Image (cartoon, rainbow, N blue to C red):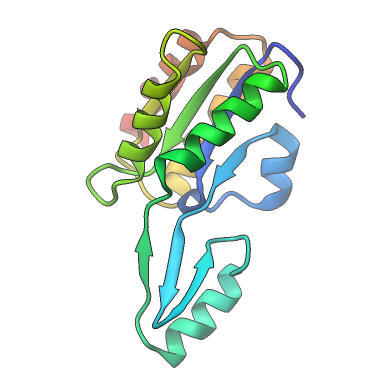
Length: 159
């Protein structure tokens, strides 16, 4: 788990990181919303991947919605209160979702107050998840926010 003063990693639920891996590296996940007809769920909170596939087979086809700006801002502020020295948000591709915009707008709300680097991974699923885990491993070494962000950007072309 992350130490006080350490850079913390935030991602979204599309990164598909296993719970035990998130726990091991202290990665915080902000859920997208999944809707089947009138039934609305928070991804990986009240709808597991297994339940998702069962529901998808039964129909209707699901829709998703990006997390609101406030969900990211709440997470950033909580990590600041827990003693993090900054946050690196490793986010699902902006070409596939508005999730990156929500994360970036939340970071802008903390500008000058708490450092948050938001990275558009241009990847989906475990591509973004792998980058988040590598960010967490880099942060674990005591690396700065700039160094963590640079490591993610260095790895992005290899996903």
